[in-house]
Image (cartoon, rainbow, N blue to C red):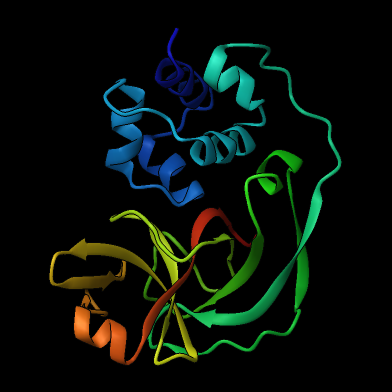
Length: 204
């Protein structure tokens, strides 16, 4: 059984659709579909996010070794100043709360959490939800990222890369239109990626 087949098995056992799993871990559904079909390799960070979501080990996803639930103490990360999922506002770096992530995920980089406020990423990300973010200054096209605009404004958007620049895309496109930034604007404003959203934690 391949990694993709194991993911499919875990997903179907929980009666979940690809879009639901992809939304929960900040992955493009098409990417997840390609992984399940064996048309794209599973990256290490993706394996960690999926293992965390399904409560199995990365060894099981990657190699088929033991699917027993993990019982490891979580690593606390801070929930920093709230980020608007809509019109960008200043991100204030104050600790509002703490979230726990698995040791396996924590070992893959530096993480922080941010709280969603606004409606631009609905219905995928709702106001009050918390996103887990890996600090990195670049993402793949199609990833959901935390982006700073004008040096002091943060927004949660899907990033589409083009040769002439990038487009920041909201899920709620009926209200929030995609915003394109040219390579010149990226350098001059600047537009800077703070990290990649690897997990979504919805409020009750």
